[in-house]
Length: 130
Image (cartoon, rainbow, N blue to C red):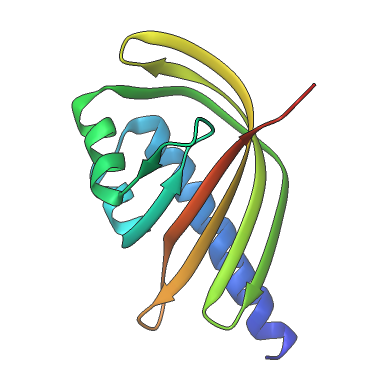
């Protein structure tokens, strides 16, 4: 793979991550639906495993609401039709009415579906220790 192709794909992943963050903040289920693969396996920082439908349902119902999502320390690696993102995220919001504020690290695996549609196929969250 040449460097121009890699940098183009990396820019697409950066843009997809931004779209994801904005969709999470707005609970934009339509946008989230387009960014998440139907094959999603997502593991929370509590060890719970979620599917795409589980994730969308949390946003659709209002059970999960994000107030802030502040990314830092983002690393991206792209190989052919796969990309891995590691990003630290300071976030706040509410889950089932209970407020939360956390410092977490997300790892997401993106897969190129079709010729130009990057979608999340897997993810994991870990708590950042102070």
